[in-house]
Length: 166
Image (cartoon, rainbow, N blue to C red; front, side):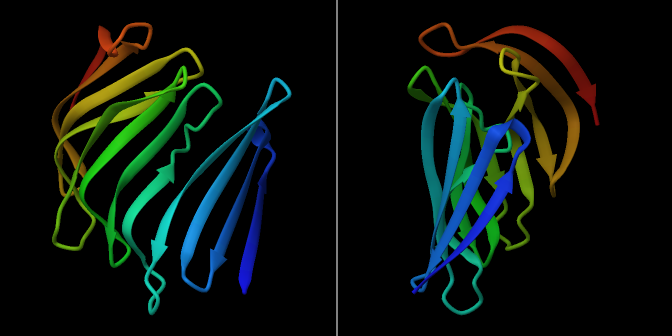
């Protein structure tokens, strides 16, 4: 038996489909209709059989998921909370590159802790990383926002754009 939940979001021409089988396997499929071509991405993970919490390794689709900026977050859930290392990946020019990430505490609260590099997008051509420290999911200290360039073998910081103090 399969249950299907269809979500339709007409902004940006994106449609999503979530399927959940009795095995509690969930697959998120996102179709992006761009220049009359269809691109498909699958992500997801497992649900706990009893409480239906997310558990184990997951690949989540970022809200910044576009044709030329396919951003995913990869990490682990325990009892529905993010734990341990989470990495931020972008698929750019058919190549996956790790552009950021950080750690969640292992106490079961799902708090971001320590050094993080976060992804920001202000449009198709403006890509930034935000670098700084978290303490119990609150930004602390100095945060630096950098513009990055994907037109090189490994992405490079090309300009420090802003610095914030929290």
